[in-house]
Every structure is written in C-alpha cells, then in structure tokens.
Length: 375
Image (cartoon, rainbow, N blue to C red; front, side, top):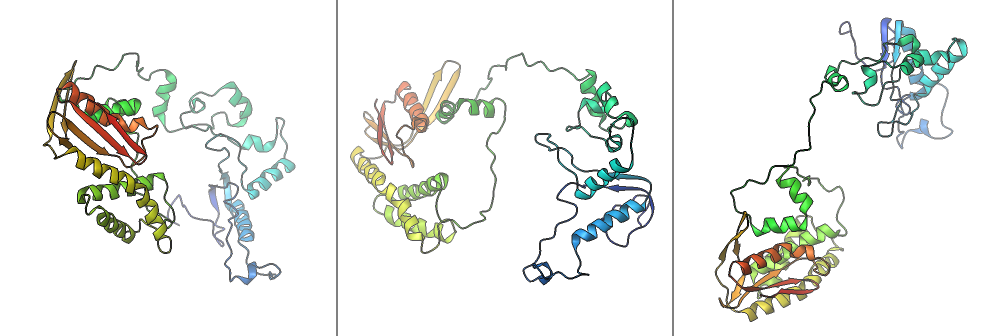
C-alpha cells in the first residue's frame, strides 16, 4: 500500500477492496500467462498431472475473479484492440471475452448489445480528430459516453483548428554558394548516385545508417559484401608489400583475419582462404606486369580547373612513365564488366587532368579484365 494509487501485478491473496480497479494489457496471448515447461518438469508431461498440482492458467483465472470482486465503484479493463500497422481488429484475452459474453447474456439494452455501451474504441493515432471533435457517428455509437474520447495532448489541436503555420514548399532551393573547390571524388559520387549526393550535400540527410552489430553466429561462408571487404584488405596489403612480397603479405593478413574471427574455423578455413585468394592472383599479376612496363613512378601533380562557376582541385597520384606519356594505374577489388558506376571517380579525374593540360592514359584493372581510358 504505497498511497492513493497503487501499481502492482496480479498476485494471489491480494483481494483488498478498492474503489477503482484498472487492469491493463489484457490482450489475447498475454493473459492468462503462458509458462514454458522445463524438460525435467514431470507435472507438465502428458498423463502425469494430478489433482492439486498448480496451474498458471488456473491461477490467472482466479486472480481475474479476485480483481472483479475487489472493485467497488468501477472496473476498467484495457487491451490492444487494433493492430498498430493495418488497424485490423485484435481479440482481447479469453477471460475478458468470457466476461463480455456473460454481460450480453445477463443484461439487455434498447440500442445494441450492452457491452458496446461499456466499450470505448480509441483511434489508432494520438492526433486523430475524434479526440477534439465529436462527430454524429461517434455520438450514435457511444451514446452513453459522448465525451469518453479525450486527450491531454493539446499540441495537436492547432493542427485541426487550422491555426498551424502553413509552410510553403513552392520556392526552390537557393543556388549552391560554396567558395571551396570541388574534388573529382565528389563529382564521381554525384555521377554515381545523383539523388543520394543531393540529399547528403544539400539537404544534409544521411541515407546510410552505420550500425555496429555483433555477429550471433560463426561465419561458415561469405556474402557479397564480406567477400569484397576481405579481398580489399588483401589487395591493400599486397600493394603495400610490392610484387616480391605480395604473397607473403596476403598470407599474413589471412592469418590475422582468422585470429580475429573473420574467417571460418577448421576444417572450413582452407576452402575460405582459397576462395579469397584465387580471384586475386591473376589481377595482381597483370597489375604488377603493367607496373613494370610503364616505368618509374612520377611525383604527384596538382589539378586546377575552372568549369563555369565551379572550381575543381585535386591531386594526380599513382603516375608512371615520362612526363610526355604519363600512365596512371588503378587496381579495383571487384569486377568491372557492366559495372561502369565503379569508373566514375577515375573517369572524372581522367577528364579533369586532360582538360587541365596534363594528358595521361588511365588503366583500371579488375578481376575480370582491364579498361583503358586513352589520352
């Protein structure tokens, strides 16, 4: 007994009279409560039940009867009668349904069923107009409780009274006012996904949600994204080690990934290692061969270009050969066939370099071939 209002669960031996008793959450499936039996519980096995054994469902039936007898002035029962997604009707608890049937059998009214006069159906949304304006249909359906629908959320009343400030969306967005130069990577992202780039840069809306979720199961196979991420790590280590130590670097990286739990355990580890390394052997061989043919590396060069109101600035890296015949080599992790969206950044950088007076030939190597962008 904590005060005038007591919140508690239904427990036996609590049949204390109260003026008002409220039972919340009396929907189907939640009450009577269902208890999953233990494997070693002999009373739950078929044929082992004896008179006097405790049953949770029978206890809940008795608790519901105690709650009915404890109410002196009013009894309030609520349940989720509508689905929150499609507003379809949902049944109440079996005990509540039996109580409603008993009321309809023992009492009669001039208009409809007696239980309909005692039941209030709330709208699906808290901002419904039925909370603020009582229609004739609601008065006909709820003649005994014409003012039963009420709310304390008065902030929604301005929406229905027409006092909410009107927002005009007819005006277009102002032009982009940015004094900072644009990189070729930003132009490549715009060409690859124009709508996503517009939402992120102009509307400041992030469409991608980064969630750090721990894996609930051990990896036995790779999906497309996991395979791409692991192979991208292997290629990065191979390029950092060079053509002579690329194999050892990738083997060391696989050992580190296996120790971190990113690779399947034995005996599935050998097959997973081969599935990651085999598609990378030929692209790496072609890339290192082309790297040797193009000559010595060149220092990086800066690109400055004015394209109308836009100013483009970027850096040319991975250059080979002489200044008159510059070669740029790029190694992609995935496949390039019919995936021209992967070439947007390199193609934009290639065009900007040629327009800025730095002619070069760009070679993009993938798992399924090579694409060359001429001068």
